[in-house]
Image (cartoon, rainbow, N blue to C red):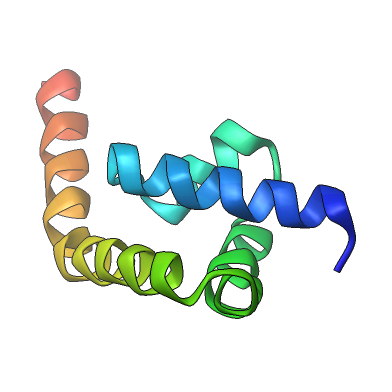
Length: 83
C-alpha cells in the first residue's frame, strides 16, 4: 500500500473516532468518494492497525443504526422550511 494511502487511512480513522462522523461526512472533509472512505476503513485499516479498526467499526455500526433517525430529521427540516 502506498504511503499517501496509509496516511489517509489513519487520518480518516482518527477523524471518525474523534468526531463520530459518518462515511459521507468524512468523504466530504477528505475530498474523496464514499466508496474510497468505506474501502479505507473496512479493508485497508485492518491491515494497518487491527485495534484502531475495531474502534472505527463500532462508530460505523452506531452510525448505521442511527441513519434512519438522521434521514427522518432531514425530511422534517425540509418540510418545516417549505411551510
